[in-house]
Image (cartoon, rainbow, N blue to C red; front, side):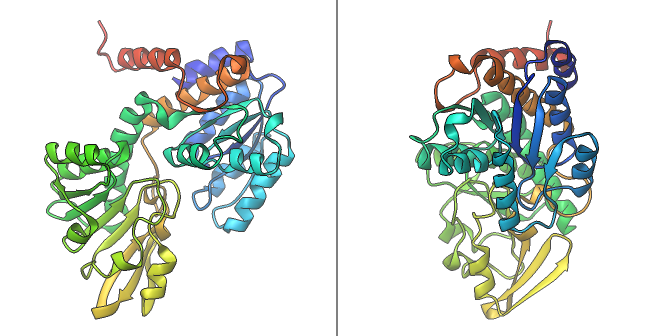
Length: 371
C-alpha cells in the first residue's frame, strides 16, 4: 500500500515546501514511510525514539539526504537534545511517537508555527490529552485511535511480535508457562490471544471493570496484581501508563519470573526500584538482565523495561505487512494535515473516517476476500 501511495505522491507532491519533524522508531519499515513522504516533496528532520534506533538505518537515511539525529546508545539527555534540534529546524508538520515533539513545541511556545501532525501511540495520545489539552492549537491525528490500526497492528501484529520476541530473546518455550498480561486494551488482548494460541496459561490484570469483564468472558483468568503476580512465570505490561509494577510488586514474584514491557514508554516497570531492591544485577545475555532479590529469588528483566519486541538480536518489531497498513494510515493522515488542516479540529483526534474506510476496503481486496 505504501508503494501505491508513493507513486501518487510522486505525481501530486502534497508536501512541497513542507518540513516534517519526526520522532519515531528508526528501523527499516519506518525508512520506507519516510521515503514515501519525501517522494511527496517533504523535507525530513528526524530522530528515533530512545533505545530503539537502528544505526544502520540512520546511516542509510543520511545517505539519502535526510537530516537524521540519534544512535542506538543515546542517553535520554541526548534524545532530548535531538528533539530540540528538530524543533530548531521549525517544522511545519510533526510525525510524533509518544508526544515528544508536540509536548516540547508547546513547552517552547512554538506550537503556533505548526500546521498539524500525527501521533502514533496510545501513550502519546494520553500525554497530549491529559497534560497538553489546552496547549496544542493545531490538529494531531492519533493513529492509535484508529480501529483499523487497533485490530491489525495492535491486536494481531503486536500480539504476534510479543510472543515471537519473548521466545527469541529468552530461548524459553511458551507452552505450559503461566503469563500475566497487565492491561487488556488492544495490545493486551493481542498478547493474551497469541500466548494462549501457543499453549500458555494466561491471566489478565485490568482495572477497568468492562475490560476485565471482557477478559473473563474471553476465557482468561482475571485478578489483581496481588493474586496473579505470585502465580506468574512471566509478566508483560501493556497499559501505556507509568508505575504499573513498583517496589511492592517485586516482593510478590516467584524465583525465575520474567518481566517485560510492550508499552511505548519504559516507565511501566519501575526499573530503578527493581535495581534498588536487588542485591546483585547481572547482564546474562543480549536483552536480559537478572536481579537477585530477597529469598535468593532471581528475576529476569527484558530490554531494560523498554519495548521488548524492538530489542534483543535478530529481526525486530511488528511484521512488515502490518506496518505497511499502519504506515499507510500515517502517510494519508500526514497528507490530510498538509492539504486540509483547516478542515480538522485543534488537538488530538482520530483518523478521518474516509481514510479508515478507504484502507479497510483496500486491505480486504489485497487479502483476496472481496468479491
